[in-house]
Length: 129
Image (tube, rainbow, N blue to C red; front, side):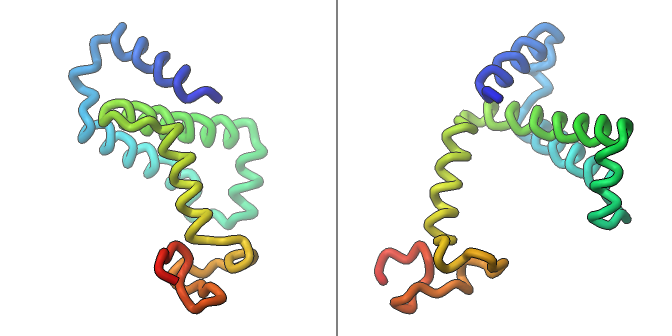
């Protein structure tokens, strides 16, 4: 997926409907939260196995895809509204997380980075250790 292509299509879609005046950062963030809630509602009260089973049904697959697409749509629009290059931000965050969670310390662990210890006793991401 090309995020820039998605952003352009969303810009065109919004402009054609004269909706830009409604797409403020606050409104987009609230819409994003609402869509995450709708996704959560599809998963609520289901076990992980039941969620996967639901995702394999035509109705479930479409409902999940629709909510995930809505979430991505609002996320891309919010990033655009506040001037964040979402692609660059994602890569930068992965790099930050790689420093916080080095493979040799984090592999197979669900510990938060502050609970992982380097060989020198410091925490991942510390520059003074």
